[in-house]
Length: 267
Image (tube, rainbow, N blue to C red):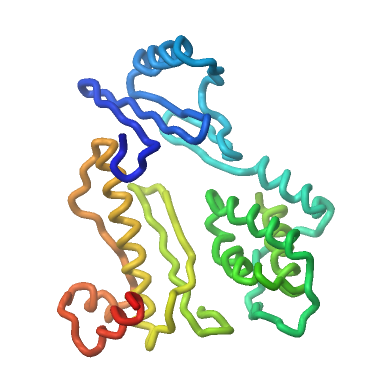
C-alpha cells in the first residue's frame, strides 16, 4: 500500500513493477511484464464478479490514448457533453477564457442568478482543469463567487465554456495575490494549481516566496509518491524567477523581513 496514496498498491517482482490503483469500485492495474497483469486479472475474476474492459481508454471522464512511447490524456467527450448540458452548443466560440481587461468582482449591485446552475457550471469546469491547465486561473476566479453569483459572474463562466468549445494579478476585492505553480516529471507536466493566497503579501517578493513554498509542498508529495513506485529522487529543482524570493528560500534564518509570513500563515 502506498504511504501517501492509500488507494495505490505496488509490487516489485525482480526487475518488473506491478501497479494497481483503486477508485470506489473501479480498478486500474498494469505491469512492465504482461504475464503479471494477465495473471492478476484471472485471479480477480475468480474471486469477484467483475468485468474486464481491457486496455485503458476511458476512466472517470478522462480519455486515454496509449502509444508506444507516450500516453495522451484528454476530456474532449466530457467537454462536449458539458457544453450540451448547459445549452451552449450553438454559442459562438471564444479565443480566450477571460478578457484581458476583465476585472471580475463581487458585483453586489448586479442581478442575482440561479445559484444551483452556477455551482453546477463551476463544479463541471473544475473537473476540466484535470487536463486543461489553460482554464484553471479563470475557473478558480469564477469559483470565488458561488455563494452569491451575479449576471457578470455567469457571463464570465459561460465565456470559459465558449472558449472550451472553440479550442477543444491579484484579486480586485481583497488584494490577495494568486499562487500559480506547475510541476513537471521529466518533460511532462503532471500537476498544476492556481490558488488565491490566504493573506495580503507586503511585497511582490513575499507573494512569490509564498508561491514557492506552496510549490515545494507539492514537490515533496510527488517525491514521496514516486518512492511508492520505487523511484528515488534525491535532488528536485524548484524554479522561481524572483531573485529576492530565491535568496529568502536559501537563507533559512528568520529575520525581521520574513517573520510576518510565519505569523500570518500559522495564525
